[in-house]
Structure formats: structure tokens, C-alpha cells
Length: 214
Ligand SMILES: Cc1cc2nc3c(=O)[nH]c(=O)nc-3n(C[C@H](O)[C@H](O)[C@H](O)COP(=O)(O)O)c2cc1C
Image (cartoon, rainbow, N blue to C red):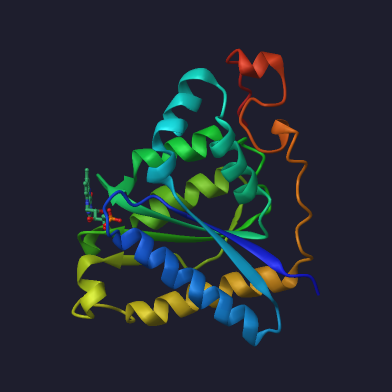
């Protein structure tokens, strides 16, 4: 069985970042779950803060700089992705959404996705289900049913939790590992064909701003 590739996208802004911490925990747990299923895998992790300027430039010009293009290609050609965003004003962060906006809307069709989010208060935990999950539903990605939310108190284990953070991480990771193990390994998309991964990369009309949403 060929090794699988998991892309991890963390939209945390702080250093150190609790969002990155959750992303790493989810990735480690998924690798562990895959190994118990006899599936080899590797992880590529990206911090969107490192690409923030290029993402903005892409939104303004319609073109991705080579580093951003290569990162997007790695993400969309992975067997599965783990996305983690901080909750800002009860939703995904602006940087996270801008990243999604520069990816072709068809690039994540059928892609297994594990959603994570960090926040200050557990009262905003439903943001995963009313904001982030619908975004991936629109993109026809296949988000696993468990989304992992970590509020500040979760890290110390002091929160009023239905299940401790560690158990929620294991549950989400097990669902993603099942989704990965069920499928054949992804074949890499052509790295020289931007229509495979960049919004508007498929036609001159789209580059000029035309967009047919569905
Ligand atoms: C502009 C801004 C808006 C925020 N809005 C919310 C919010 O609506 N609900 C919440 O629980 N936390 C909110 N927070 C807190 C962040 O979600 C939380 O600190 C997050 O874990 C930070 O992630 P990081 O450590 O990776 O940067 C907000 C923080 C900022 C900076």
C-alpha cells in the first residue's frame, strides 16, 4: 500500500499559537491512528501567517506567487487535510477564509477533511458547525463528523467539557484515519497546471473576474 500524504493548514496568528498546537496534536493523532491500521503516512504542515502577504497579493492580482502556488498544490493534492482556524468574531478568521478564497472551488471535491478550531471561550464551540463545516460542504469536501474545538480552558483540562480535549482529538483523528484508509492514495495533480488548484486558473475569463458559483 503506498504511503499517504496529509496536509495540515494552521491559521493561528500568535507565536506560540494554540491553533498550531491543536494542528500538531491532530496530525500526530491521525498518524498514530493510521499506523494502527497499517497505513504509512507523512505530514506537511503550513502556517498561513507565513503566506499572509502572498495570499493578499493573490486576491488583488489573481495570481499566486511561486511559494504560495507550491503550498496550495501540496494541500490540494494531499490524501487528506487537517484545517485549524482560530475563532475570530464567532467565525473562521479572515486569513483562513482568504486562503480558501484563492483555491479553486473544485480543488477539494471529495477530500477528507478534519476541522479544528481554537477560541477564547467554549461558548463559541458551535462555530465549527454553523460556519466552518458549511464552507467545506459548499466545496464538496468530505469533512469528518467530529470537529475538534479547543477553548483556552481546554488546554489546562479545567474546562466544563463533555469529553476531555485528548479524547476529542482521538475521535476526530480516528474518523480521518478511517476516511484515508478507505481510499486509494491520491495521485498528484500536474504541478504545472494551475487549473488543478488555483481559483480562476482555468480560463482567461475567470482571470478577468468572471466566476460561476453553484
Ligand atoms: C480579533 C479577534 C477576535 C476574536 N474573537 C473571538 C470570538 O469571537 N470568540 C472566542 O471564543 N475567541 C475569540 N478570540 C480569541 C481567539 O480565538 C483565541 O485566542 C485563539 O485561540 C488564538 O489562536 P492563536 O493562539 O493560534 O493565535 C478572538 C481573538 C482575536 C484576536
